[in-house]
Image (cartoon, rainbow, N blue to C red):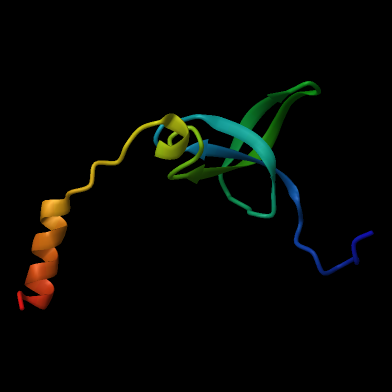
Length: 85
């Protein structure tokens, strides 16, 4: 049993991926002033909406995509910053 009065409110929240628009309902302690209507087995309910930059729907590890790394630009940036020795 949890001790009363010391834990944040744990409630249903809808997270939306900013890149793909995919949404999922889960529970969290995070809050938001934005809300969304979500269809449930009990009818339509209103939940807080949290927009995230990356979720499993858009993360390269889960989608199988690769991130292109600009190695030449990184080397040039390093040389500008620290010079060549």
